Length: 303
Image (cartoon, rainbow, N blue to C red; front, top):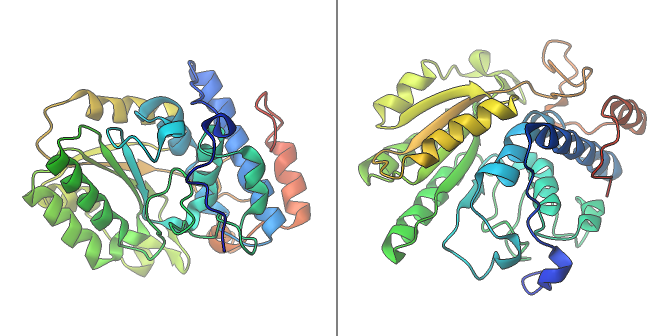
């Protein structure tokens, strides 16, 4: 059985780390990338490219944008909720959850190990703080987020509901059924973030199944659409904060965030161009050593 951390003592999980400056956030994003490389290399399994590409967005979310209380995750439902639909990029989520106080950093050593609750896709049975549903079956996360938003409305709660998705994932029909539902029910509390890196495991998104005109599709389904550079922490914060500051939102919102798969380590970047396909491949020990040399040590320290 995986360990149950539902009742892990608050003092063991720590308090929310608040980062005041953009420079601090950028350094944390670099540390998150170090965590990802070290976790994947130790496990010798997992998804490198998308996890690295989303480090800036997850850092901006958890250390600046979200209204959340890690040490009260199971008690307080009047806060923002996060759902990761493209669950294969779990390493980046595990890193920011640990770094922001949801569970001990030392647990990052257990990625994909037998009996670990840090599996290759997020699971719910072990009650890992920060994660409410199992995910990774592509196309399903937005439906779950919509259910949560409807539940918050019924209960009179005020939190926003974030759902992170991949652009290749948006080839799934369930995404668009969910998008139609969110608009129909006027779920202004829903904020979708799509990782637009134009990569999926079999090639480039526009070659496998084009999703364009992507922004126009979301607008046609009744969503407010925003676009930003997903590897610019400043742009991510500015875009998401602009949405959150409008407390009278009537439509769901989606941010189409352009990212570079493998961002931060040049030989992981542009994964389809050099045919190495780091989408679903972990770094070797040698790759990890070279990557960590590029991602120099930070003040936050390795786990």
